[in-house]
Length: 425
Image 1 (cartoon, rainbow, N blue to C red):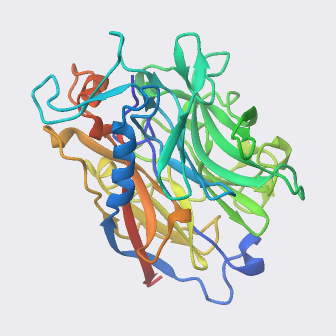
Image 2 (image 1 turned 90 degrees about the vertical axis):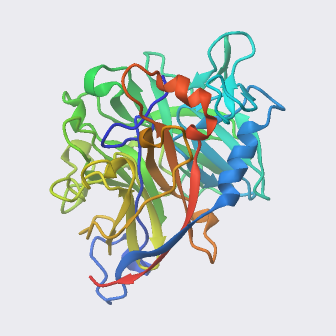
């Protein structure tokens, strides 16, 4: 079954976004900005980016191939050295798109398979965009029954969801570069874990320029943590800064409306090296992940979704997330933000809100918004490009896959341009 966000929102188990950059020698330091250059940040305006939204609709609706992407969530991107962009998705639908009307008589495009089976749903995929911004090709794996996930399911069961990716040296100081993709390893679950039990963070290595999968390594295993709600998955956000990659993660407590955010850092070129990872314990960077403490602790009006992103906005760090503590349906409708002068905090907020537009639907009350993600490689004078995923959370008894296949617009990324400005501390 395709993953839909829980009431507290996670990516395709549902998902969400965050934060930004320091300057000069301070950017890798543990101290805030003593020169006073860092200021609070707030959203001043936003607008829909129809160009990106329409390009994914065009590609998804194109039946030139029927073994490629027609919809997905968990939207992340990385710019490749030759100017192409690799888009990474979690649960992904393939197959053929049919013109309206759908079987319910609605004026909606709908998805079918060609041989009577249900449409393919795979746990992940990648889509390659040309230098000119045109989506051209879907990367999947191969199985005996048809296209498989690009990042294969673990041999001991479960699946992998790709999150952030970076282009980095193959090894520290090396001239050759590779793509490192952070993966969330999850296993099937029941009850509060219907979208999967978190098992750990892995890193895949892709060759350049051909994007061949070279291997996958476990970097932050969490199976020894007996309470799944206390397991931290890293890769919700990743920011390169002054020779380090700062990697943000979150826990996933099933009984709480929101998650706490955690932080690790890794020297450039060592994302796939478990020994290079260090975790923030509230005072120092240290080797043992179990000693990490939240840099933004859930409680009161403060929390993050289990997926979020980090982007640079001058000398400040800015975090966007669904408003999981907003009450009612805010966690599936409204984006809020936090800011800081250093990746480990202190984080200030929540600060401001925006409500992204949802695709039109016959039952709009069941359409959820989740997993805001920043794509700084597409920043222009019109602002930061921000994507968000949409899904359908209907009443019991109606299979979500049937609704998503009956209206393909319900399970595709949409895009905004967000503009920021200083605000009072």
